[in-house]
Image (cartoon, rainbow over all chains, first blue to last red; front, side, top):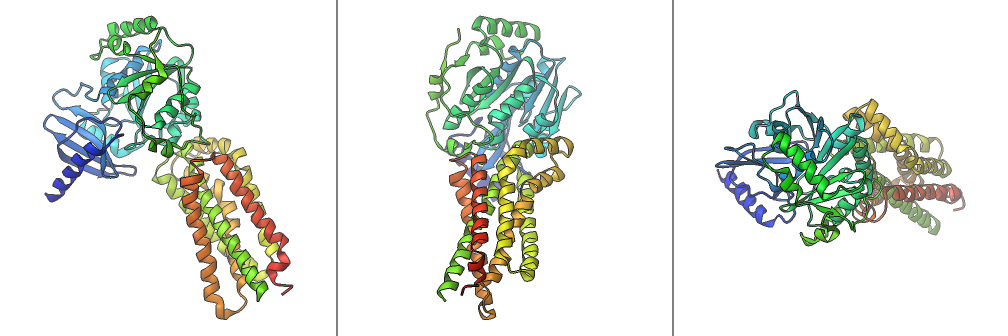
Length: 310
Length: 206
């Protein structure tokens, strides 16, 4: 009993003190389950109608996923809606891959929206997959599959190509350095079909953001950024920048065909184009992510690197 | 007396520097392994196990060699081989790890094999130094305990500094390949010092 109370108190303190938790949803409530996996300390909290998955680190809790029990199809964490925007860009939507499952809300949503698309999630932590199934109604089917592996190791081994690759691989507050380098993005690019896009969730409050977007831009000539309510969603693709009219037309077409709940045209209208990347490009050889993450900056500053799309 | 003191200092400095480089390489090893095998506890377990196996082999081989031939030149030669091997890492690491990942996989076998290819041989050769240093310093059995404790103590201080400084200062400031080159060059230099001061270290001109 007192244990629950202590965790809860620590949890609430954590909420106030977490300046760079990636998806900082207002998750609270009772501890439903705690699991120490090979990679994380995973806490599942429930509060009435909501359940969230958090990773505990340094006495802080970083929300990895959140679901409304009465409406599991809703994407309650703002930035995840912008992650779905990836489906507006490519010419076809046969195969989508995600690195980093969390509660599996985004892929479950996409699976419901796109009836003919094969979706594969690569998740490092087997316990995350178990807990997603147990608490977040994540259901594997022939079209919605999960592989337990490091994302980069999987891409190296598996040469199949994808139309959209979503990257949301946070371990608590940080992204492992090998998923943020030029070599990694080059590998991602080589696994994309023509016209395919990479979509990544990036946390904007430290210097690491500048390097992450600059590195993405060093491989993908076109990078669009969307303000996902605290987190920024970056969409990168090969070739020239799409005109805003072109993107809106594509979004409208996909919207018309699949009728996703979160309107793609509306989401696409908030696009910013990365035009002045300022960060240092990260490589496998030199990626001081810990140092960069230690330098905090204004959450809104990233907009200075962008401009309105034409 | 003066001579044996200088000899002791030289050997302890070498123990410190080699201890630093050895753990520096372990930390750098993680930067080479992460891109292929991920950055989890499994990667670290493989690295640590590999380094410990290298230490064990180095101590065993070093002990056997030094009883047969008390030759600082031989020990220095092995250090030069170790450093040269380490210098070549950036040339072959990417193709080799790609091959290991695709043909062996990212399970324990794959990671341990990769860590072994990366570090086992050079770190074994580097830890051959320790029994050599103990034996070279062992002028009298009466001081045996202290000699062993100095060599291990100083070398462990080097390990600690190598771990912390590499992680918190060097890796955030330089590229991994550049650091590999620097550590490898330092190892080669330690070897050269031993080869060139062979007679001095034997205590021939005492």
